[in-house]
Image 1 (cartoon, rainbow, N blue to C red):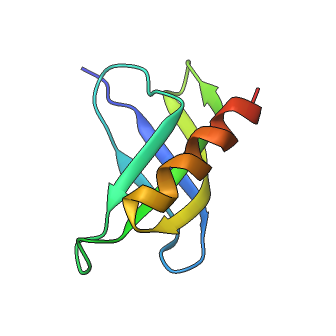
Image 2 (cartoon, one colour):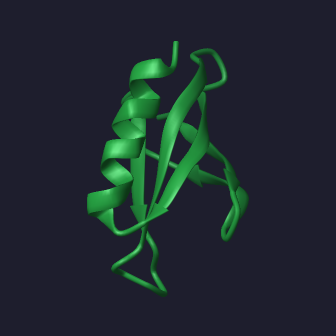
Image 3 (cartoon, helix red, strand yellow):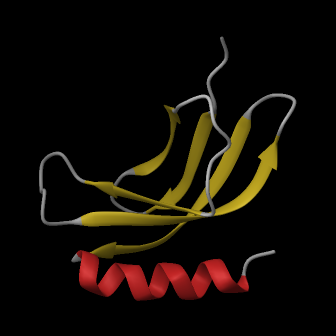
Length: 81
């Protein structure tokens, strides 16, 4: 049983880090609620996928209230290859 690893890059407050995920291939966007500040989310858009190593790289797009982060995140996802 293998799990995907998400590399989350560029978040100014959280820095770059890795997170283990499920067995299915990741989507184009990720949103994580901050543990210490539940009203704040960090939004990431997928940059690349390595199917062999099961690593998906995501770049940070925005942080803040979900109502402001989601439009920016969806716009960035539309521009990504």
